[in-house]
Length: 90
Image 1 (cartoon, rainbow, N blue to C red):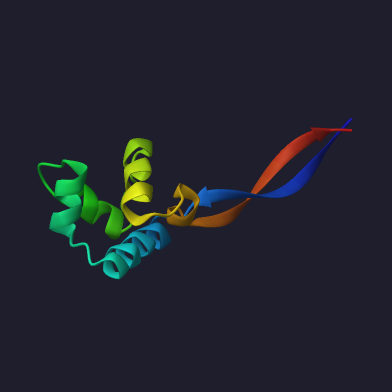
Image 2 (cartoon, rainbow, N blue to C red):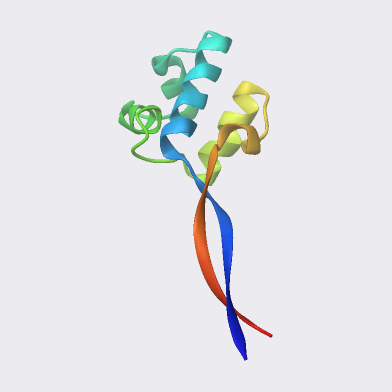
């Protein structure tokens, strides 16, 4: 027999993560251009996409951001919780 359990599962909050990256940049005095150079990007579009909540940084870029801002990846990636239904065996 199985039952349905309502679970809350964490998912990345793109907008909140973008705001967090922006606040870390502001607190560190790092501009978009500075970050572009530190990450070795030819163009800043990826950074603008993060700041505007359109994309998340890739894992390698999250590692670099964590080092640049001296924080953990967990502090950068913000979460929200969504309902997830799962069939559980009883």
